[in-house]
Amino acid sequence: MENNLQYQPLDFKSNQEVRWCPGCGDHGFLNALYKAMALLNIPRENHVVVSGIGCSSRTPYYVSTYAFHGIHGRAAAISSGIKTANPKLCVWTVTGDGDALAIGGNHFIHLVRRNLDINLILLNNQIYGLTKGQYSPTSREGQVTKTSPYGTIEPPFSPGELVLGSHGKFFARALDTNVKLQTEIFVESAQFKGAAVVEILQNCVIFNDGAYDILTDKDYRDDRQIFLKHGEKMLFGKDNSKGIVLDGFQLKVVTIGEDGYTLDDVLTHDAKTENPFIHMMLVGMNYPTHPVAFGVIRSVESSTYEAKLEQQIAEVSANSKIHTLDELMNSGDTWMVE
Image (tube, rainbow, N blue to C red; front, side, top):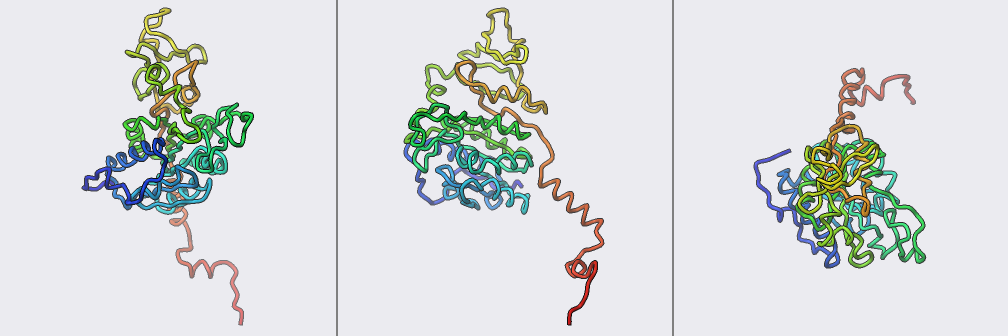
């Protein structure tokens, strides 16, 4: 899929005006996507960006590639058809927490379960933004919105737990303000063979402003965020003074040098282990008991749906006694009507 051209991020920027609100976290995501596409050096005609409905779903208009603006909740289904029909394409599915996990929830889990080689970027602002501020499947319990004036009584989905529960092979997470990390993750997700889900914690300045301030406040973010890299120790905090250890069947935050804990006790991140036990706990970590995990949390290679489908078609074709439409039409019991 590579070529000899050297792309620049602007090569993937369309001539359309970006109509997201000033300060919207989607702007950072879009810049990261441009950068990642350029770094991948895949021909523009081999990229397809697909969306459903929502603020995030305006993305197809803003990229200079093939694109498809679908209907509400159906981006995963459309992407599945595109990838199955033409496996050489690099398919990007851009969706929101409402679009993907409410009306599109069924399509979402089956895309993950089937392990289609698709990059699904889930922009999670914990609200319905385009339709003006209703609570979504990821809104915090008790959150007051236009459709929950006394606070929503529904427990929220954790996208990462939903992916792993659907036997997902790749899950990563980033903040909308961290363009560098998003770019690195998008490149890695595109190079991964299988369903790659990337959750972006994205701020909606109009209807849910400050949703992630508890993580991004510059005075506290070092203690509330942890950046995971495969093969490296799970360290965080100022000067990496804190770490994550396994305490029985639970993850525990410790300070290096206190209570007898040393660097050797800190877990080493293994994104590639098939066993999802640690991965499930990592995606579920939340402040104030734990830092929130960012980076590639799970990346396990496995056979993709389209690869198995092509293999099955080849095997059936090789063993079939029927090779043309005429042979098919004249096979079995036939008769002529005069």
